[in-house]
Image (tube, rainbow, N blue to C red; front, side, top):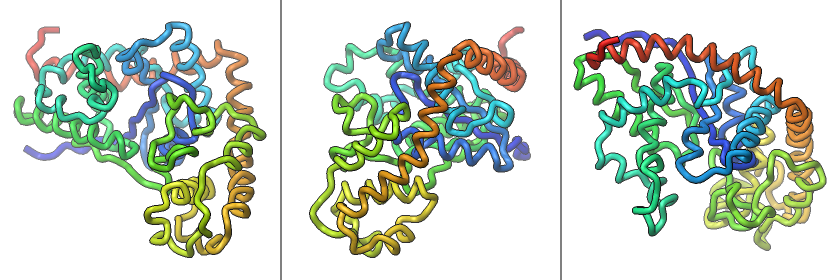
Length: 338
């Protein structure tokens, strides 16, 4: 069989399960913005079906979905250049997700480290959705025949599972129908760490608000959190090798590099030898300049939620034009009478 030519297409999504953080912005959204100007069709998603694998207050879920969409747009994702969707408004995701649940193997799911992390010691009390959601994630991607997915390091395993599911489906049915999607993991800060503990990922679920920069934080809050970020007593090194075994220093330098579109070595060539008392104000000034306009625009967008809903509804219509024929062909391949 000849390998089909797939349209270069990007898909990625973020759960609307809490406020956006700097980690979401640098690890994902900033790259989303760049890719919409590359030679790709781009589809970006509020994955609310994934969010409910753990309990969500309904009012909070609705608010967070709109706030996430506002964050996407305020960060530079244009509804004119990219398709912006709310996952549950495109039923083809869930429909293909069921087929992929029948393709994926239990052993594959049991190896997923994120399930182990989220379920903790009481895995038997977790939802079936939490256990099986990587199959739905595969469907999110492959319902559009997406060829590339920008992901953080923590999601790389799930994308490998997506590739496994596509490979098995194609093999089982003797087709070359689904692409073997490529991960896009780039940049100085693909994994942003806590401002209070450089060994832990920055998280919206951390009980300490000082551990993260929220994308809704104003200029004063951003600057204050950076000034109070944990560091060590040593001066900054002159090259990246000198950041080894210095997690807090590495994290702050990574953040500066990602915000300023530089490599870590480029940053250290400028600031090597400085103490954090000098570097932190510099980082704070940069972060405020880059992030506070986004928080202001998010607030403006959230003042008109009906417009956000219109953008998502229009995006869902566009997405279904791509997804519906792919699902229909999948049904034909599987042997389902339509």
